[in-house]
Amino acid sequence: MSVFKAYDIRGIYPEELDESKAYLIGKAFVELLKKDGLNVKSVVVSRDDRKSSGSLSDALAKGIISQGVEVKYIGLSTTPMNYFAINKLKADGGIQVTASHNPPQYNGFKLSRKEARPISKDTGIDFIEQLTLKWLKDNKVTIDSDDLTLRPIYIKDQYFNWLLSFANTQGRKLKVVVDAANGMGVLYRDLFESLDIDFIPLFFELDCSFPNHEPNPLKEENLKWLQQKVLEENADLGVAFDGDADRAAFVDEKGEIVRNDITTALLAAYLLENNKGRVVVYDLRSSRVVPEYIKKMGGIPIKERVGHSFIKKTMREKKAIMGGELAGHYYFADSFYADSAILAVIHMLNLLKSKNANLSEIASPLKKYYKTPEINFKIDNKDQVISELAKTFKDGQISFLDGITVEYEDWWFNVRPSNTEPLVRLVAEGKEEKFLKKKLEKLFDVLGVPE
Image (cartoon, rainbow, N blue to C red):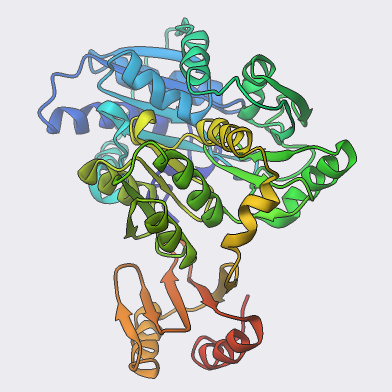
């Protein structure tokens, strides 16, 4: 399977992704930017703390430098910090060396153009893949054997000061448990200690072998330590980051997980208080309550297909104030239309302070429908299954924006093919659980048994 994915480059080190490929990817990345018509002067490079990240970032940097381009190396970093640096340092693009929430034997690259505009398979990764594979085939891998000393540009203080400018210092002092999962979120320790909160760190020792639990807050089993700690400490809020700290999940004061689509609606409502009439973009797996609440709070909801490149593109086009995905990505106009989990946390703190209420109380009115999590089905012929669903549910309102979405007055579902696996993913929602389960039986007749 190719390491060149829909939204990034990722694979097992060194079997699938090694220093030779990293070097060529660095060269090809510059070629892509030149193809855009840019006079490429500088590229930001940063990394997580996986064992392979140091040597891969060195090789990547050598590939970039071999093209006559300066590397602005900012060292250990979260992915949102890389986005900030691209804009702050006025670079022509940026690459974060990370495999995000994947196990420690993986590594990879997240790529951005100028202004932290995302590069996906359709907008550049395909080009980089073709060029890299051509050079490998032609045996044109000649890495400069000289040692490379990348001297980091220290940008953390500027980044933290920028984030702190959004924090509300008024109101009650909140007790907050933060689970960094031993990933790059540990870099935020100083920031949390600077906020006006009672900060309780959990797994804040940097170790990208992830000894305590998988750094993927989308899986509920990875949140049980956070839930327990919130209850033990009688905390107001729990926050969990993923491996490169570009995603976050929230737990209320009762230790209950707040779904990420509901979080999107809550944060949007907070930002819309002083920004009536602004657009909020949400992914099509989100509950119906999201657009309903955005409208109620004076915003304009726009549904978009899953994937950060699509969300960010629509946000820029519509000058949206924020966007949110079910996976826990939160995007803000203030963060260059890029995802910023830490800014989402700061806005959540601001929301709780401004309302002087518990998160469970604020979220409760939005839990008006019964919604399934994403359910996976192993399907080889994805197009055929989607066609069958369109025939079976032809009496509904059908959209093919991303897979198939079928809407009825009292329920809806989306079935979306995976970009990387022989799977389709189902999300469904209805007015009540018993009613929806009957509808799911009809869906399972087409989709088969869940994974």
